[in-house]
Image 1 (tube, rainbow, N blue to C red):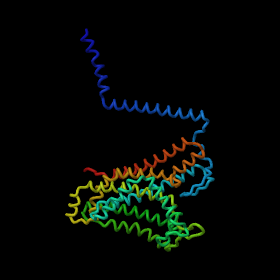
Image 2: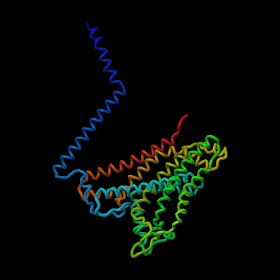
Image 3: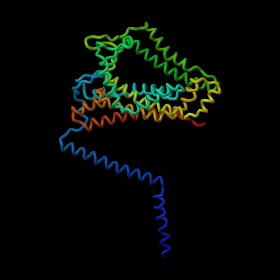
Image 4: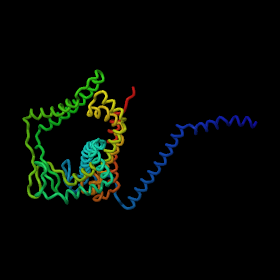
Length: 398
């Protein structure tokens, strides 16, 4: 009888043991349990916050966004006045942050690539200068660099009446950098469209040249023709419209310059600090990516008669990019997030505008939530683009 009872209980016991020993089922169970605990914690925090706000009679919600902002913003890419709403004020902050991030990333990649290649130069002086720059910039905190460049504009540069003119039409003073720009003409819209068409044409030409080279082995001068297309189409458009060349030249009127394009001291200090600091880290990433390629690749390329420029462009960089892109993405994200330090030097980025909004409305939770959401979107979009590019550059096995 005891033997029979034991035999009847064995299948259930074995099913229970196999259920808990199944790795997939156990992983799903753990994730459900973790999600349930996180949900409970989130509900507790949310309910506790709402209860405390109600107890102190603090209004919640985003209804304040449609109210009048009643504060000015020094720099704006779109029209803005104190009579506009908080939504428009925050939009100005978003656009200012995007401006700093976009220009900063482009300049950082260019400068960092140049420094990374210079770090590997066979010229002793060039390599040592690049190494000194990298070590110094990496060891100085970014906030101190921002303070230095801010004091450089306001304490070292002279007043507009004694402005430094390093080039014709370019003036440097404690009011910022002012330089001449072409005066607006309707044809410039078509020139921009022609430039975009030229970039698309250069991309198509590059793909065609690569397929042609794989099929015939012949190298097509893509760079020269692409440069001709990108520059030639806008130039022909400009000539066909009568070649307008009137310039808006800055002129000293009273205590400041009028005309031209003005880069404020706050924007200049922020851009210089972010670019010079982040480029030092990008340089090391580029150096590591190039050194990851074995010297045999270079020797093989030289053996078949490729020039140094062709070796770097066709052999080294395409392989090095697969090593460079992932850490380069992190540095792009760091630059975007470090731009929030602009509040320390008075540049009206999104954090600065949101902080002013919080001080005026008292909606701290909503304001901080908007800051988190905006920077999360910036980071996700940057990561999405760089992951797409990384996937495109990955090796495809045949």
